[in-house]
Amino acid sequence: MSRKFMAEMFGTFWLVFGGCGSALYAAAHASGNGIGFLGVSFAFGLTVLTMAFAIGHISGCHLNPAVSIGLCVGGRFSSKELLPYIAAQCVGAILAGFCLWTIANGTTAFAFDPNAAGAFATNGFGSFSPTGYSMMACFLAEVLLTGFFLFVIMGSTSKNAPAGFAPIAIGLCLTLIHLISIPITNTSVNPARSLGVALPAAMNGSAAMGQLWMFWVAPIIGACLGAMAYRFCASGTFTTNTRTAAA
Image (tube, rainbow, N blue to C red):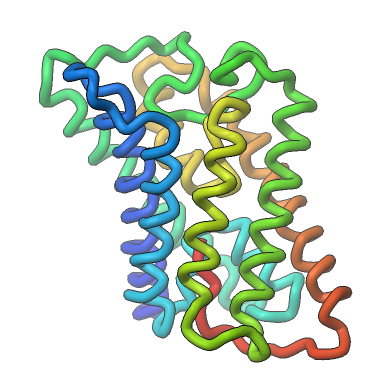
């Protein structure tokens, strides 16, 4: 369990540091050569793809409390390991968030507006949505996207799926999710990712923590629904294989 805990902590750190870091440092670069939404979307997908190959054989590479809960509901993960996994993911995300904050403050070009939508790569709805989507629209988007994420995770890691391709499918799925939803919620589908950047932002005046509940509740509901949907679709070939789950 200690090896799995460390793997999940390092993996979630990498997801938050790589994904949110690309949004903070490179999305809209002062040189005019920023990577934009497309680059940030691929950055999140690449963090999952690379870490899935690195730690998939150790912990399953969940990197996401909603994924761990969904896999538990789907019969792919033991409930006895659920709380340690979630704790490891949150620790990794929070450490990454504070590292991102420290690095960002290393330049005078960094300006933090606590009232701005998506400030410090935080997630939000209403006035804190990047383009002003309502609470219900954001909630539905997070439920649906996390649901399909779990569906892809369970399908691509099934014993009957092509061997060795799960990290690619899961990484590209997360890329697609970000391409769809960065303008809606700044894309969560991962409670730990949302928590990791919300904490340093809140400590510097942001109201992001007040909306954090949605980015726990909606992804968890979506993950459970996606896992149950896949289990229903694959009821004739269901397997308990747990090789690589990813984030």
